[in-house]
Length: 508
Image (cartoon, rainbow, N blue to C red):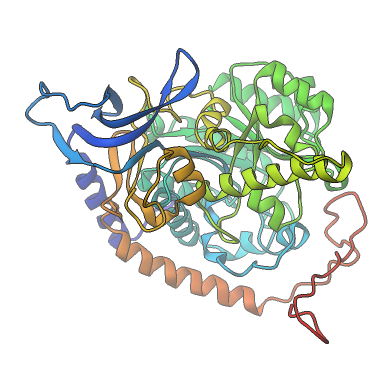
């Protein structure tokens, strides 16, 4: 099993003790709270109000007041003028890849598969410690930006040790994680067999650190529904059900991509209409029948807006299934990792799409806006919780988990706000987040991560990242013109290049 260096182990022990030492009861008072009314199933804004956290739960909401009968041990936290939001939920991410940051600023999905993904040279280059540091740095980046829950499609599990490293980092980080190790054919990478991967997954089911762990739970990332034998698929689905895994996730992109882990296929295996949440990431070119199956079985897709623009997946037909959609980031090494940014981008993209239909196809002038900021907010909060079948997260309500984000309403870009949801979705940035609470414990406080060993972890990560980046800069990758990888089911082509430079040249 992978073991961190003694230095890192000591840092983690310090973090654990500082976390345990936090008050079990504290009161945010003076804030505007974006609460949720479970009776009406709608957001309810409470102004100049107080929020009591006791242990891991929201224990009380007090509109226009500060309760006077709290235990003496309760810590009072003045958040006057601030906005308290439920923690953001990210339903698709690959956290291990942090070391690649900025290497793929102009990449495509085809190039990603060749250079940076689970079947790239990473399997033979990343050591377990690189996986650990990348996973930890990625998790802390999300916490810094207000993400309190992530579904990690953990396809950096190139070996038993690599998987242990990723899990160790996840547990150390403090972020609520649905940790889903990937089952993938690595026979051409390093020989780590499907059977070995299955045995390792089964061993994690019995890992004592995951027993009764309400922050980190074990799931499965399985992209082989359309590739593997029926025997293999049924074997893994049987494991999911018998071991009560928390979630199953798979990449799904039809059309030219040919990644056909479709709802129709999963339904044939009996994998949709059960109590196990299934989250299908991307879902471009989704069919009407697949949409209907998702609605009937209350299963969700994860749209990753910036990723799908950046790599070129696009969002064909996806706007028609936003009632069964949540949002994710995908690969934080290529672009921003904050969920508010994803919601903002997706809000404006869907607005533009609807406006275009009215203007260009109907030749009419729109006079109402087709999507609200509240809808965008729900996609990164309540909808993410429903996708994971966790109604106790993604909302602020008495009895819900205390996963919270506090925004400084007096920052230059938020100053003068009236609507807290519009303030968060359209005006805020990561620098406005003063506090993040996960499961009743501060992960970020007064603008700084509460992870006590972060400075030293940062230094170790930078050494790892430099090593990885130098290795990649020296690698020679062949041309993708003739699709040597066999990825996708359509011919490869060069898109029309954009010209931003007057005269000769394009400025590319």
